[in-house]
Image 1 (cartoon, rainbow over the protein chains, first blue to last red):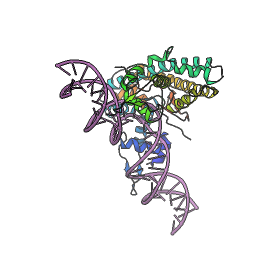
Image 2: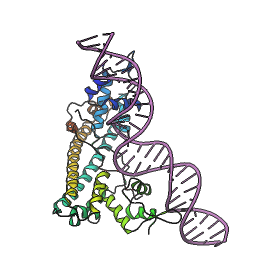
Image 3: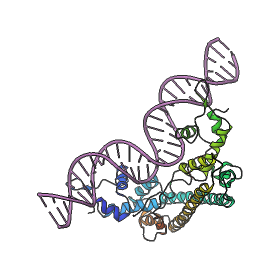
Length: 156
Length: 156
DNA sequence: CATGGGATCTCCAGTAACTAGAGGTTCAAG
DNA sequence: CTTGAACCTCTAGTTACTGGAGATCCCATG
């Protein structure tokens, strides 16, 4: 039986985040000590690791919820898990493409900056001018979500 | 003189977003009609376009604020603009690398899924198992921010 | 000149996924 | 038994918007 601090260390998840996952129902309410402190068993550790790994893979919490539901019931077909993963892959590829063009534009901007005053700075000028902008394919009518680099994990 | 709806159409920015930018001081308060409605001039249109382009490039609003301050004063050295852009480039490259490894892991997961029941689904299993995970270099102690695909822009 | 419908107004609340702080209690080592 | 680290709950803040309610305005017809 681990306290929340141990679980935190074990899984690289911050303590408030664990409580947050409990709040939103991703983690079940754990046992408590007589003094009302949370105690976790092996199963919970695994479940949290699963969640964290999913987050590392960029899955939004709603997807993770679906995946957890699936994995709770091993008899079901894994088709939806596959679908979710494929969808996520598409998402990642979309981001990759978009970031690549972004990188190109940033490089161009920076290369052209000679380093004088703002008046003739190419960086500022480029940003002001949308004309020769490659990144316009950003303009995807995509449903969004945010993921990709979720801040987490500084085992400081 | 444009109304807020025209400005919105002109720049591909949603109306509430424009008001939001005004709230947080990125856009100056515009003139108003006798009936209290906002009217925008050419300068405002340009400023908003600048902001939008920066957002497309993934710059966080704080950076954009700095860039706007710079561009408001053409005498100053463009060194800080350059720094901001370079920093942003680094950020983008970090994300690119991380997404690339993500993609690899997702592909591996999906390839191995034979499509039976959850019990022997490789996708679920992979997600449960953090062991052979490439994406662990996520574990960067980076200061975060979110950008990269900020949802915007559905000229629907 | 009246009217009607779309555009606009303000304000408040919600989104994702946490993070941080205040102020108080509990656990475990010495 | 004491002390200090870990834990508790609750609230509010973060980023960059987005959405809705309810009221008002603008302007093109009739």
